[in-house]
Image (cartoon, rainbow, N blue to C red):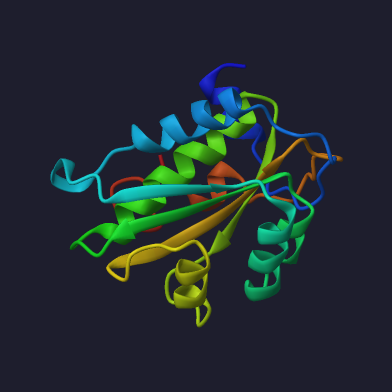
Length: 167
């Protein structure tokens, strides 16, 4: 699948087949996160891959809108050192991984981390050092189905030269 197709067909998937995801595939996805753009090349990120069902169930119980993490074969915990642009950098890494997952035929869903009341509890659960911040949780696996949510059209969101400007 080419990059544009992956970008235009990626959707948030919350229902997964129980099939395991190969370690090599997970590494390809995490590598895409590692290669994300980063302010001043700081690269503050670290990635914890959780495949153990009991640990995923714990993550799901903590994350208020991530209950489906328990059913996903993989959860990637995206952490970042608290640098000036940790949230932007970690979000870029998360986005790269979501798109890489789609390109490889997997489904994924971004679950919020930073600013959530459970963030510290998640970092403790994965034994992250105190200086690390939770950016996101990524549920990952082979999708049961690919949802087709409504997206706003390009004409509804594009502005030329100034807000409201048309071509």
